[in-house]
Length: 583
Image (cartoon, rainbow, N blue to C red; front, side, top):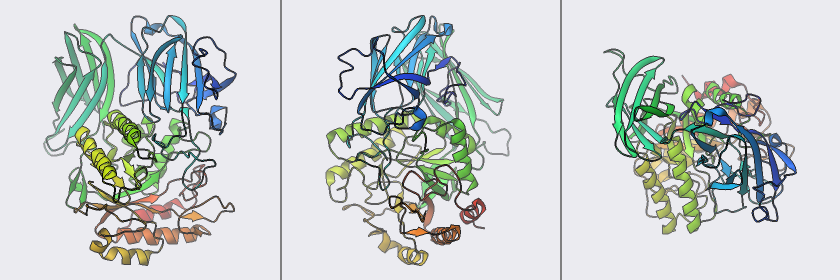
């Protein structure tokens, strides 16, 4: 169903997989539209474009074949493709993994639909536009240097500097077509409950019609666990499955980073007894919760050893260059002794979450920040935030949601009640759509309602760190580093405390543009001494229940990674692993 000669040939969403699909990555026609005349001139019809681009890589990257970092805010893609015979008599859904930022799509010269948001996935029912034989897709993309849209680490000001990097625009994840019947499964939300030994599934259809039923099969490592048949009487249905232990002694096969057990689940939708759609997914029996100031994984205290991971590559920027590149980063993270990542300022490619599920890695899912606060910012952020939660709800690896970071986009939140209300609304909205995960509402400082007290502190001196943290009450009523930990009108409520950013140690560099935190080190021995002393200081502060080191890799001018941008280790792996795993 796909061509292995094209980039990123694997199925884009393994947690929501259909058998019949067509990968549309590879060479597309491309054109900048700096004068914004393309739509009025009908470029979506028969116009010829002067450039070629390799999808799914943004035009700012070398992998795209264009490698242009100039300010182009409107541009077009066009792709001719042959529709396979297996689409005959079926509906065709055109899927985009992510397009930054505003997309309009035409199929065979007819406007088919669009989407706003740089990190979310979307689909367009293209059935009535597709035809046998050759077809053409045209996509107009608009990506302004607008701080009211979620940007994350994409700079909006000249040359990248500090911790903001080359911006990306356009298609940056896989494009694909897939077949469905006249009714299909639009969404699946699978919720495990280890205490009741149950799993529930919310099945959302694109529409409801009569005589619908569903067959559900659950298996574990090839062994059948549950087979269920049910009639569907609404567009949205709730199904509940009880899972029996393999024997009367062992517990269920829980998901943890050490034992990433996954159950396979398949949904077959039938109309009048005839199959019209089939979706494969999976789930992990995993629970994340809080008891007092402890975080529990599957009802047991669990110390989180996270590393900040921004998901950039030198030649492809925020698009993972291959599935193997994703696997490599996750394996290196685990080999270094970490059990999780904070995916910083990026909604990741779904295949990252898939491999974190498969290999066993905790993930904090974080919303890319906007940087101006106004009414449209609120709309833009909430819309894309909900898309993120909806799409990636089923991944057991994701244990924490982070809607805001370091007051970015809400710079006056300490005293501004409007911004405080906005942050609180994100907290409670997230609780309303997902009761199964924790939330760090404004990670770092100036916090409001939150399940976690996340502290950012790059203090390089371990003795000063221990002195600062020796008086817990004083620390929590004031500031750890730059800003107070809680907004006016809010105070610490006994939540678990995690140092969610620290370290940031950079080696000496010849370039004045390169930077880390609090000076540099000359060699690996100096690095290990500083990393070890501060990490041990955190580990020895008993009320801290985890940490997140900054960061896994260098990213452009920010050179404080444990690996450089090409994924070469700067320091011996065994030493980092030993520090992360004290006896």
